[in-house]
Image (cartoon, rainbow, N blue to C red; front, side, top):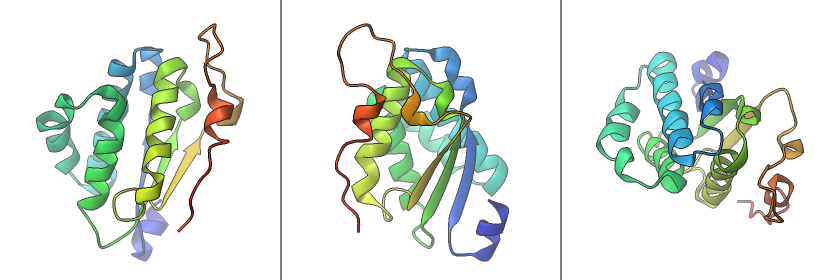
Length: 154
């Protein structure tokens, strides 16, 4: 991350979202924790305090299923000098609706890149995210279905 930021071609951020695991299927709590982790990482690694201001002034009014994508959109548009690259660690720690919400929000922002969405999003973890299971007990679409959606490339 440091080397990419120092090269001056990208704005790169690493964030560990493992603390959102305790939210389990509580999307409201999970997305609040994910966004808070991003804000803390932006402040720590990039000395950028704007995300916290956004989260507590605007973000708390946005529904949980749209909060992360709106946060990312705001943050990417706040510095148009460099495309954004995100490293999201421990995404595989999330389960149930919280995981689905995060992945769906990432997927829904893809066609807005690089102006209003990261040029690249890297999901880091110990497991292949496609191997995660949703424990809902019914036949709703799971994680594998999310990755089979068509994607437009620019």
